[in-house]
Image (cartoon, rainbow, N blue to C red; front, side, top):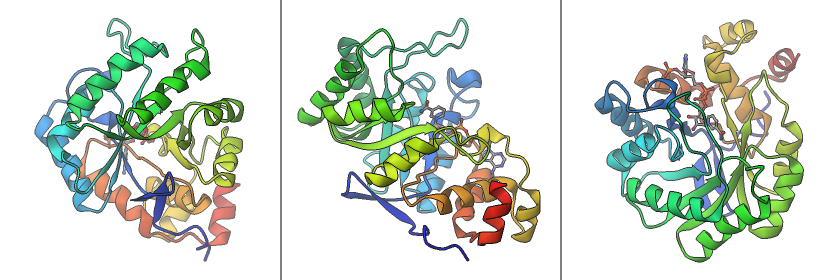
Length: 278
Ligand SMILES: NC(=O)c1ccc[n+]([C@@H]2O[C@H](COP(=O)([O-])OP(=O)(O)OC[C@H]3O[C@@H](n4cnc5c(N)ncnc54)[C@H](OP(=O)(O)O)[C@@H]3O)[C@@H](O)[C@H]2O)c1
């Protein structure tokens, strides 16, 4: 058995312990991640069920909806006795084409965090992540605004997202970076170097689209060995691949949530890992 990376927990910023298998709340919205979901009660049930199952790391962003995902989390889970909430700022939505324009200007970010604090019903965000570098704004200037939020007590930890190793190093010169969130799954390992950097510096690595946004292939043989689904194998592989890995599978369904959480019980053998990694 390959068990070396099987600690269930990770200490974010070296101090806040969360279960490594988290939940991504982007899917608790309408189509194209715009507007409310068809059934808001069901969305709140998914969040409640997640924490009942011991999932205590919840990822969201002000741009999901926009505002909708954060609002539902505030309604369902505040005051967060059982949850650590990570949100993000730096993107906004245009519903004419479902675009995700970027804005890393300090004034924009200051306006954004006030909305997030209000919707999440808190006066301090556990982890606030800069969603994506804005090519129109000096990266250090944007990250410095997150450092100011930390100094002002608006956020406890700062994270970055969609970054290269170079951008991560630039950010770390400005403020302590607790987590990095980049796209990563068994079918897309472009950011392996960023993951390795995170391992070397004890930074949490949050792979977004951990299920390949619902499209994982080629895992059926290993899945059959465990009487599991390919999605479960994809999650088990992530958890075993690195001790700093914090997957945030997203779902709008209680059934899929339960299936995803059960994936943390799967132990892949070294042979199976070799098969998966091809
Ligand atoms: N930082 C960034 O730029 C960024 C970008 C994208 C996403 N994210 C974050 O990453 C999280 C996850 O990403 P994601 O939602 O795009 O991709 P994902 O977690 O890889 O996949 C989600 C998709 O898979 C389906 N799914 C989930 N569990 C399933 C299961 N057990 N069986 C079958 N289908 C299943 C979901 O549909 P159902 O609803 O039907 O279950 C949904 O369509 C998001 O919630 C968000 O928090 C961050």
